Length: 236
Image 1 (tube, rainbow, N blue to C red):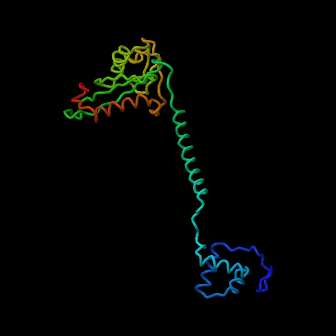
Image 2 (cartoon, helix red, strand yellow; image 1 turned 90 degrees about the vertical axis):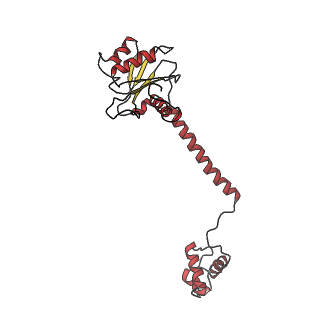
Image 3 (cartoon, helix red, strand yellow; image 1 turned 30 degrees about the vertical axis):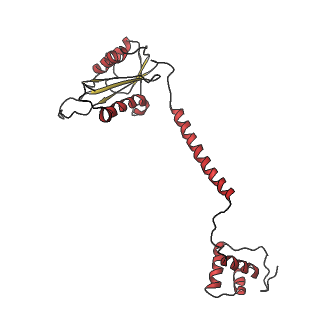
């Protein structure tokens, strides 16, 4: 195609949005002619006229889509992505969760040193909360003892767990605290051996692997602080 400017120009030649805006500014502000703009941007006069017409109709600025089907599809894709992400997170949580097959197959143990009471001094000995929970049934056991020693752990196992439990305990699972782990003469180890209870330990520096017992402790502490008016440790 040959324009009347004497240049050979393809009829489908187009300008970028930035150059179209420049054409409109040059025409309105700098009073450039259609012929000069056609020569400057190397497009036909017809193209320049189309750009000026579009500018007058305010079509050079980005327009929001009025295609409702496109909007619905775009929303649907976003919604689908959210649903897929939620399903993925749920599956990840289920994959990490495990449960034993029957009561007594494994019982989780944990200990927490309790904060001082209002009438206690900083030098006073702090009571300790011992807690255990069956992996399968989630049946909890708890007791407050005067210290965090192996003897107290053994007392808790014999008096507050085994004597109250309606099923045989096959395995005890706990962290690497000194009250639970030791040599053959360790009181808690002796109590486990005498009752044919196997022992398993959490990975070092990974208390979350004993999460069931940690959660039991947390629930009891929430009850102690927020929900029920306990007078002292004995009342609790």
